Length: 86
Image (cartoon, rainbow, N blue to C red; front, side, top):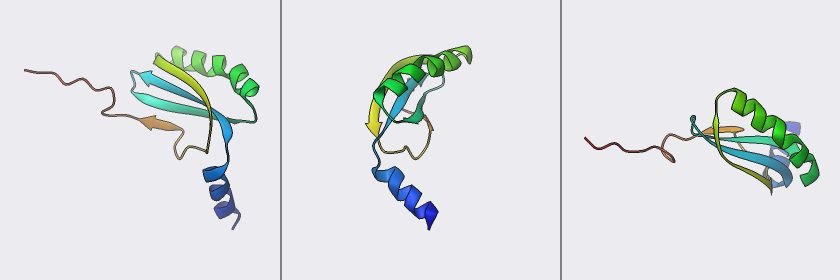
């Protein structure tokens, strides 16, 4: 019963999250939840630095209030893929 409650809470709760979109690999990473925007801003640099040390190319960093993401790392196979012509 507690699991169901936590899942429902995650669907409707609006916590602060950091969303980092990357190229190479083509992913969206979610970091959080944070209680407020200031807490998210203070944590942002650490997450960006960790990803850069792994060789990730960062496209965009966004802070937002949103429900808990279903996945914290979302891999994209088509959003940024270039089609080569032969």
